[in-house]
Amino acid sequence: MPRAFITGITGQDGRHLAEFLHGKGYEVFGMITGQNNPKATMLREELPFIEFVPGDLADLPSLVKALTVAQPDEVYNLGAISFVAMSFNQAELTANITGLGVLRMLEAIRMVGGNEDNAIRFYQASSSEMFGKVRETPQTELTPFHPRSPYGCAKVFGHDITVNYRESYGLYACSGILFNHEGPRRGLEFVTRKVTNAAARIKLGLQEHVVLGNIDSKRDWGFAGDYVKAMWLMLQQDQPADYVISTGVMHTIEDLIRLAFAEVGIEDWQSHVRQDQRFFRPAEVDLLIGDATKAKTQLGWEPEVTFADLVSMMVANDLEIEAKKAGLTIPS
Ligand code: GDP
Image 1 (tube, rainbow, N blue to C red):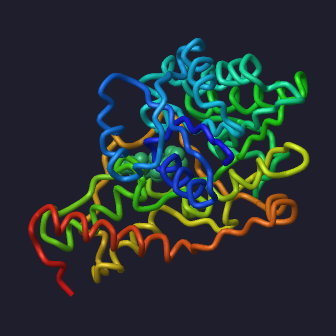
Image 2 (image 1 turned 90 degrees about the horizontal axis):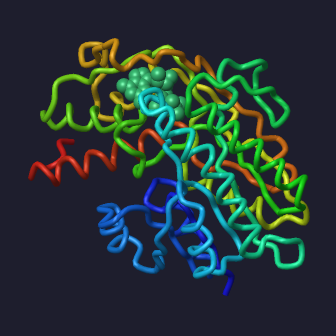
């Protein structure tokens, strides 16, 4: 039975990846950070097959210990301070976990069994946020980085150190440059889920409007369930490499809002949306759109869920959750 070790197991991608790998017959180990982590309790019920191992990306000895216990064939580093807006307020913490955490994990892999004979394969969750103020459109694996947030800067370090350890020590280390990927498990702080949840609550009469920041920015949004397959595929190749994972289709936040509200039968979305400075960022990433040709040709990877289907799936999920919480039936 192959063994996988996942950091960020309680997050959206960690849960999708754990499910996917379990379906492929993997023994799945998830690193849990913190004492009495409330998300671990939730996860124990949702995905009981995961074996929890304590560890922290800020603590190298804990990573060595965790890998010694799990003895993984594959390590997926999804753990990070992952919210761009928060990274402006906690920049040093973001640099430490999202950036230096990658270096610590690579060192732990070298110590526990990352040499060429007994190679632990490593996946680093890189991000389209590294492209930031984009130098070309669409963005590929060769597009220069210009990050616009402490999160983006930390991800650039994580990406570069992954490439460096591959080139320096012959590690099988891959960096997946994933564009925004969403789904029902997305945290409510991200714009997609914030909007689909608000549309559902407004439809149910539980709220009147949603307060947002900049609705002109454009993103290439895919479904997280499709994207975790690409992570796994990267670790099954003869040679490690870096890949852009994206849909190649771009939408504005306004498109997202219009679609989400249309899903619940509300056409005049404008009367339910307000904007407030507190949701604007000190520096913005205006547009992201990826070219995943390399992943398509070399990995045989294709996204399956369209943007419209994604929004529809998320609104349906939020309607169900919010109606259940409030003891309401979903109006037709
Ligand atoms: P990101 O691409 O990783 O930053 O993902 P987010 O979902 O957090 O943000 C996507 C875009 O939505 C960014 O351009 C934000 O500035 C914009 N946005 C506008 N209003 C909001 C809001 O209320 N919350 C969030 N999270 N983003 C917002």
